[in-house]
Image (cartoon, rainbow, N blue to C red):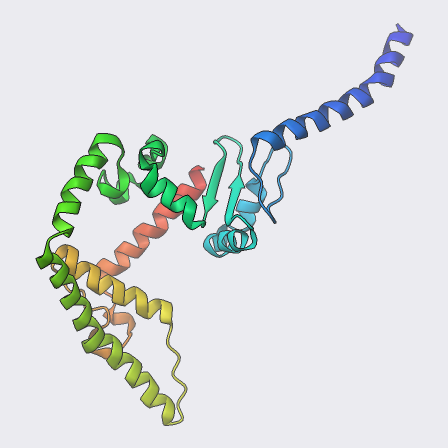
Length: 237
């Protein structure tokens, strides 16, 4: 009996060693990898996602830019492997050339259902095809294109440019004027989209200024819905 246990103790370490490395080799063949993203046994890329959850967009952008193929692969326990890409050829292949081969799936649609419902941007198959045909018909109308141009021109001339002139004028007077360009463009885009899609002007760039009180309740709720949806997606994956 003692010799049996001694034999087990003698052969067990090399068996475990070989098994561990075989597991890693097989896992590497199945799981996509990317530059700068370390995979851990059993946990996959989960630690990297948790550590960078507060700067997810910046982090993934850095990895994509640093990759020669402009894409990053990942694997998280409990879900399938995934790929995030910034390669224009990949985007065209997925969204245009072979769109039917890349359905969003019930999981992704369910994540965005509370926010987007089952509209054009959150549907698959025949439902998506029917909505796309109707949307393409509407957006091909010359009257709609002319209306979009008029809305954008008015927003630029009456609000966006006066804001920049005001900031430049105040700066020449000795006062330092700092504009959050991301905030300005977000308000600019929100005004124009609401005018085109809903026929409502939230006036987020009204009076040539960027004031907190100028942010409409709808814009605030829209941003909060985006944040909650992203949090839901990250926590459930």
